[in-house]
Image (tube, rainbow, N blue to C red):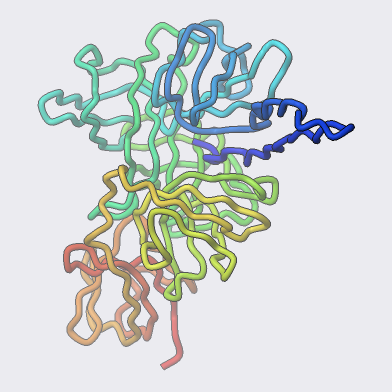
Length: 376
């Protein structure tokens, strides 16, 4: 899923001027034109033939693409809650680029428990169709989601794409972890990605959100391309919808969708919440101007798992190390696939090191998000 970007809309209200010669009649007010965004990305709300509705606006589709290639099936592939990007507008309509979070064969389907796996990732989705079974080719759209096990996925839709041009393609997205721990591999959540056949983007690091294409050969995903997903300067003056994945201690900077950070200052306006509600796991819609969050609207009907999240920061000497945790002065701190190790540190080498650890407390369990070396 690339950037969840909704272009900011600008409307001009045109009012009439009073007539001359003392007449109290006025010219009728022309209707405000419906200015459609030049670019938009999000989940499809409705599909009506060749038209789709996203964020309450209707668009006529001229073609449907995946990986910049037009798909022969066209609009028949489009379904509600599927993530798409409208690449550009043309006289004949918009070009829709499919932006799945996962693409591949579904396995471990359990319709009673609403669970399944794809490309080595275990997911749950209450709306999983009974018509979808093991080894079917599917496209999964999801948002990054804060859970008790760290950054995971909130599934929006699971769409069968068997017998289409999409069958045979593999894709997954996630936040990089354990890059540099071993040669030519990194982790995306539960999945080990082998990138021995390609070069990674310059400057890529642990914690970056990436899109990986290639082939899933159990138990590894063999990458043919790794693309860094980030909010760059072209996304300024836009509305961005997504999940808060990090917040600093003063709530003046927060990260959205694990892709980019925005500043909160005295000009920031809040809707359906306030600054105190900026916590990991909240779904928000943010209007951004030059990197500053000018308006933050909290989506209260999302059902995110946020109420039991708190942040922490500790310093001290590590006194012992286990397979998934370490201890400082009698306190236990856990690590997971999304823990970032700075200064060439590894879990195995923490014993005796004086460190600074930042993280979140989930149901009383301290989970490290960033670990760096400190001078004692």
